[in-house]
Length: 209
Image (cartoon, rainbow, N blue to C red; front, side, top):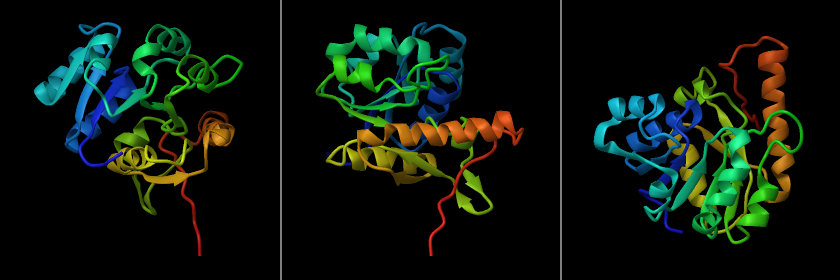
């Protein structure tokens, strides 16, 4: 697809979804948030901060905006039900899965997407760092790297653009078969941040020479 200013639907308005949506709106993209409660505290905070730069409504209303990309930034426990309920609207779209399903089993939702939305192009991204590093991706060594995977076709440039517009450097790890590798990077982040007490302002950088 042609990159440029995109129409982005962000499902979820918490720390991840809200931070990403704010940055994309600031970059000039058209952003629509789909939330469970359009009058809830997260939605109200976005309205207060962004005004008419974004639209906020139900999931169904957001998905009706003919999006170029859908970003799933829901709690992991809500992913299966949401994908199933809105499968017809999601199928065929470019989808970025940011959600981590905690508590055992696969941490990503790729199997559900493949079953319910077989024609969608699914990417795994924004799941390996805390939201603070999306709000401020700059470190002394330069911008943080973001590892991602998904189909290597005409949808990939749009995903790379959205990563870049957050201020991150995209690092492509391959097709959907590399989702476990991307998730392992997230596991490393959790181990360092929570297991070793390194603090949430921690990110990764690939060095080459």
